[in-house]
Image (cartoon, rainbow, N blue to C red):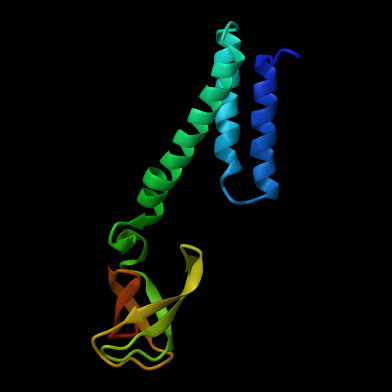
Length: 153
């Protein structure tokens, strides 16, 4: 059997990370990153047995994937209560489906927010289509909005 050298791991890691561009699931990146780390370790410790290299790569991949899905992704994109408050509060949108008390409507933002231009919203008052609203709060996956009272310059 041919010996696996440190640069084989680096090439595998780069290949997997480049494959992520063709398969955008944000999953292969972590296998590639773990392979690059194993390659760096094997470059420093050339006597590291192949079986331990494979185990290190597997464990590293699992840890990075777990870290992404459980820690980083949740903290950046969502809070435990739902959508991130700081992303929406204070933003101005346009009503595209009428808002009524205790009924969902829909608003559209001029620029996409977290990948979407339109969002479900609720209001304490009736707001017709075409009115501008300001986001006051986030309740789960719904935006709580209020009508903008004056038309500014």
